[in-house]
Amino acid sequence: MPATVVLGAQWGDEGKGKLVDYLSEQAHIVARYQGGHNAGHTVVINSETFILHLIPSGILHKGKLCAIGNGVVIDPACLIEEMDELGKRGVGITSENLVISQNAHLIMPYHMALEAGSESRMGSKKIGTTGRGIGPAYVDKMARCGLRMMDLLDPSLFKEKLGHNIEKANRLLSVLYGAEGFRTEEVYDRYMRYAERLSTHIGDVSLIISKTLSEGKNVLVEGAQGTLLDIDHGTYPYVTSSSPAAGGACTGLGIGPTAINGVLGVIKAYTTRVGGGPFPTEITTALGEEIRKKGGEYGATTGRPRRCGWLDIVALRHAVRVNGLSGFALTKLDILDELETIKACTAYKVDGKVIAEFPPDSSVLERCEPVYEEVEGWRQSTAGIQEFGKLPGKARSYINWIEDRLGIEAHMISTGQRRNELIVLKEQFS
Image (tube, rainbow, N blue to C red; front, side, top):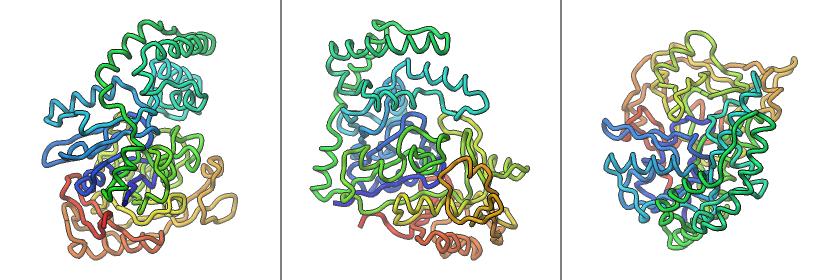
C-alpha cells in the first residue's frame, strides 16, 4: 500500500507542482495535506501554464481523485474561483475527481482582517504573510473555535458558531486596530451560497485514502511551502502556520506513518525565500537579480519577488533529517548554465565558531555567515535534456557533489518548466 510524499526541502517555491504533475500519472489519489491558498504550484503542459493554489496538481490528469486534507485551511471563495477557472480551461471539477475533508477548517473574512491589522502593527518586524487569513484560521483551529467544512452542512449550527466568532473578532478588530467589524447575517448568507456549491465535494478523506491504500493503489501526497517554513522545524517566527514537513502529511490527512514508503524532497539548484527572515546565502549583488529574472523568481500566488541565494547544504541536511528524505528531486538546474563558478554553503561561521548544523534559533541564524565551497560551472545548456548521461560532465559532477554532501541520491532532475523536461533516475512507485 504505497504512499509517497513530495515536499519542499527549502523555503518553498522549489518547483513541486511539476514533479507532482509527473508522478500523478502513477497515482490513484493525489492528496494535499496542509497550508492554504497562499501556495502556488505551477505546471506547464505544452504551451499552457496552470497555477494551482488549493487543488492538487493531479487534477490535470483524467481519472485521478484529488483530495484536500483536514490539515488545509480553505477560503471557499478562492476554491470556487479556482474550480471555475479550471472549468473554463477544459478541466471539469466534479465530486468524482475532488473531495474535501469534512474536518478542514474554513478561512473567514475576519481572519483576513485580523491578519492585516497584525502585520500593519509589526512594522519592520512583520513576518511577511500573504495577508490571506491563513495564520488566524489556524489560530482558531488550535483555540478550538474554528469553523469546519462539515459545519457548512448544518446551517443552524454554523450560524450559531459564526455569531460567537464574529462577536469576538469584532471586539478585537475595534480595540486593537480601530477597524470595522462584520455582520453575522451578511457573512452567513455568503457562506451558505458557498455551501450549495461545495457540499457534494465534502467527505471523509482519511477513510477514502485508507481504503485506497488497503486496495494496493498508489497515493501521492503533496505538500505546500517548504521545510524551512515549518511551524516547528523552520526559521520561527518567520514561518507558515502549518507543518509542511513530512510529519504534517500524517496529521494533515489522517494516515499513519507506516503507510508512507518514501519521502521525496524537492530542491532548487540554488535557494530562494519570500518575505522576512534570515537567509545566510542570500546574494545581494547584481547576480541575485540576474538569477531572479532568469529563474522567474516571483511568487505564483502574490507576484512578490523572491530573494535569491546560493545552495545551502547546512539547511538541506536539516531537511533531510527532519523529513527522513529517501531521495531528492533537483529543479532549475538550467538557471545556472551560464555561471563560471557556483557556490554552495557547507557550514556557518557565527560568533567566531564554525558550525555544521542548522541552528534552531533564528536570531543565531541571522548572525551566521556562510562558509562556501566552489564548484566549477559547466557553461553549457542543460535546458530540456531528458537523459542524465547527456548532461554536461560538470553539471553531473555538481549533482553528484550535492548527493555526497546530503547522503541521499537524486531521483529526478528538472531541466525546464515543461512537463517533459525531466530526467527520471528512480521511479517513486514500484
